[in-house]
Length: 396
Ligand code: PLP
Image (cartoon, rainbow, N blue to C red; front, side, top):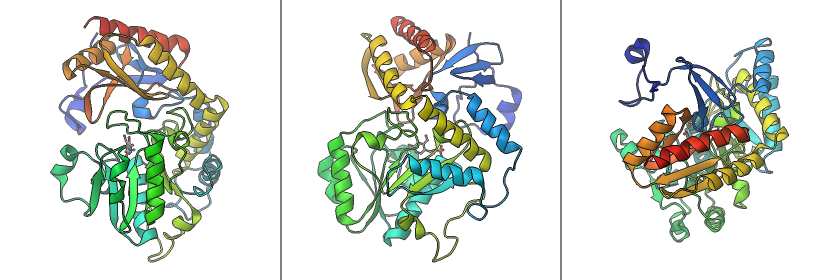
């Protein structure tokens, strides 16, 4: 079964982001499953790109959304009115972050969170130079794209922000390029779209030390790695370092759009004046999204889902032992299976799709299969999916 018959409306009225969209026609989604219009059931092993970490339409999220719908939707631009869902979730979030990450600014999306973080770093340091890493991905608005380390995505949109230096990811010897003129260094603690690259704790610690030494703010983009995906609530916990600013989105809203950048009260305070309203957003921290996020964080904690992510890694590595796999890398349920070449990878992904398992690529690589299931996927469903992957690999 091919499942790919994009409707006339999809073809004629919706802007496409590639010449070959997946085009699956979604009827509904529940837990780890997508149900298509032709009646097929697909096991979702990409979670809407690291969004549906507690599965689709978790009952706790639905009931929090319903309760908020009965109270209010948007009432005012960000930061003026006291909205219980927003302030309550900010308190919940800071309670699971270390001291120094205690002031939350909500956005709608990940890229907006990074935009806010970059502006905040400039404002707080009075500097404008930025350092980022090769093969990073931070989003597609102009600021985020300026610190995204892949020229194929950047070049068509030049000029971008000036004075951005790219360093090799994970290489401690190059960190001297971070200097007293540097406002910030932005990095994913584990690169996602760059191909699931896990750097060493030593590198993280050297990076932290260099930033502290020269007064540059360290921004961790945990938009993909956050909320249990890598086996701890936030990936930085595994490397023994704490950033000055963390950016969040994706899984935070439990399927609703929500982003945030979080820093200290002192650093965030620099946004209050010169000028006042130095950074505003209409919809950031939408109350329905915040209500959903409160419920999501509750589920992640109550069901120990970061731990469950580590269990998923064990199951995947145990079952996917196959001659045609070069490597399985990553942490927790943020895994990449690298195969010999792009054509074989394409065949495996499309066979799996035809047999009811949704897999995908990462943005910067074409021979790495992304495996990122909902963290609460059952053992039975996970193994059903892994069996289908093994069968697709067996076909060669
Ligand atoms: N940062 C990282 C690490 C991401 O993986 C992504 C999206 O994939 C973004 C930023 C951008 O987030 P959004 O698509 O919500 O703007």
